[in-house]
Length: 195
Image (cartoon, rainbow, N blue to C red; front, top):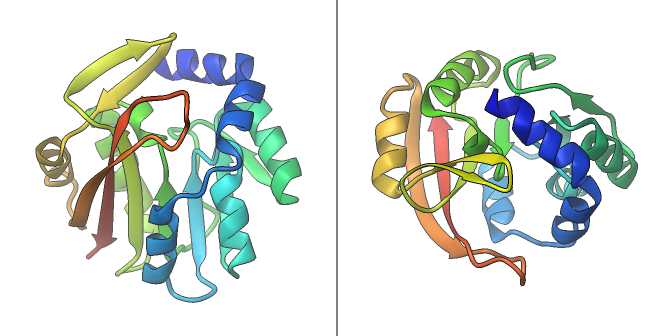
């Protein structure tokens, strides 16, 4: 049920969300691209405004963009001049084999059991040694904020979660402050690799 509430929020607040995120630059994306094979295929799971997909495309990567909000998918498609698959994570099936998975501020809308189920499925579409990036608000537990469902994570919590997904290994974690000037969240960035 929370998935529908999250999508409803983004369909109602899509323009505000788009404007507040589209011009941000994440150093984590630079690190992710360095881990990727040049020209590799990436899934941008929860592409939002399309900001990161556009940078990936501009750097020669092939990108499969996915978002559950039809409003954000439309804006992201226009921003990147690239097709976006509008699907919930549970209903999304990748269209082939990929060499990377980028999930910036998206998996945090799922419970641990949903993340485990999703990642166990998506691993089958990722080649060995594929990097995965995921970010979560820093902390513990599930919280409701503005009608949205958030799964907070610490390094320990993330290690525990990943230990339940065979075939994934944590490369590193680090924390950072929110880049949006009107937000004061601390974020956990996690880089993983497919064994």
